[in-house]
Image (cartoon, rainbow, N blue to C red):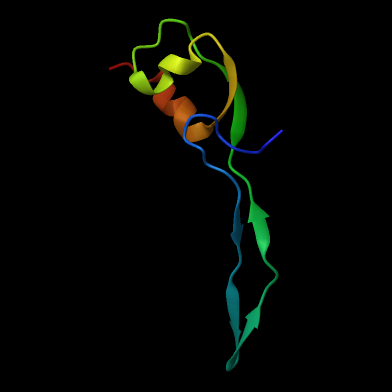
Length: 73
């Protein structure tokens, strides 16, 4: 199973930061950050065009898309 939002396609990303120590930068190891994916059942009577193809299905969606799905136009 791929860790990717089925609606917007958001997937994992690499991240890291450099920490300044006295006069030099100390690179920290990179970390993979994953999106907040959750299983959601899209209602059959969806109004928005973006979600029409997923109507009545159970999909993995990121928190941002779930929030947008709950909005009424």
